[in-house]
Image (cartoon, rainbow, N blue to C red; front, side, top):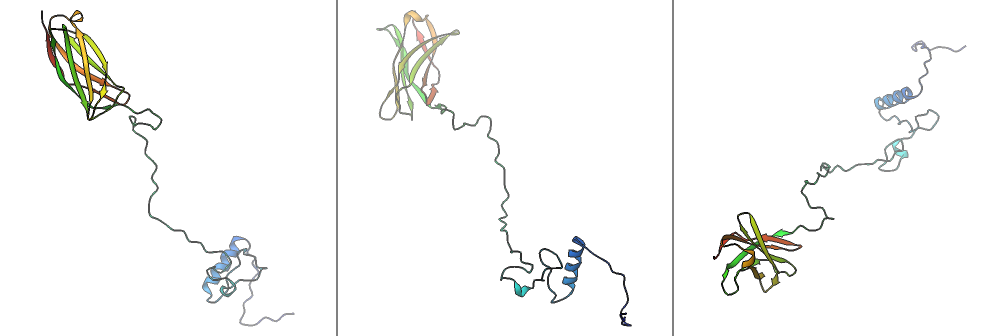
Length: 194
């Protein structure tokens, strides 16, 4: 028979398994200074690992230590494009420019309303100049190709013959249009004689 020491109390055997065993060993290790840490597997059959058994920078238990850098910059989702935004696949929209109607008047010799003007600061070829004459809801037009010069684009040689016009006061507007630029002048009055 085994002898029992008088100072020891006899307790019934309790078997702790799984997570409870790992928790119990962890708590006991934390309470006992200098005690070894449980292995990463948490089984009682493997040799306990101590801080002296591990490589520098590796915590007891064998797992490698990793640190994550926190930048403090929040991640912001891109905002949707406005409905009128130009998309890269769209062809460029024409830009507006200033158009000046520099002269408009009745030419008695040719019996026509003649006009001319320019647009600035655009200098380009390939656009179309249009003289629009309007009276009482009726509009008559004349067109000519624009001509680039040193600092502007010129609109000249625009004429509407008397055969297309009634006598009286008309409103003249010079318009310009190309693939890249559009514009209109301020209206100007012109009188067709009797």
